[in-house]
Image (cartoon, rainbow, N blue to C red; front, top):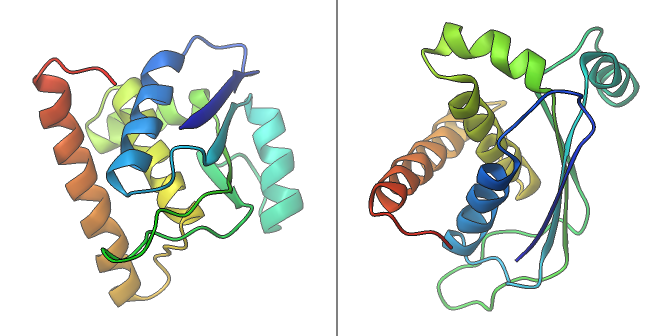
Length: 156
């Protein structure tokens, strides 16, 4: 799995941990090992500019996803899709601020939002109650499985 992470935020982040989580999630979802994902960590000013430019909403947000090849999770009998998954942009200072509201550490919040962003890249959304239930159900299953994986001391 090709996961490229650039930290332009000016804030320390668990870059290795985020890249490991992204690779693990993509492998779990059967995305082709040669698929490419880019993760960019930015400051609040940059995130606010992206938020306004792409979503027409003011102020910084915690995560934005920009799909490229519109890859989807394959059915059990389908081959693993390959291509450019897309870009995820995170704002660590926003993430750190909202972590306490969600009863998580800043690193846990960043992980949570990274998985959320990956699911958006794979076509999931939460606009309707049904879509919300599907997306967050998968999100919660992935996070729980990753905690089990990490507790087992394994490192991909």
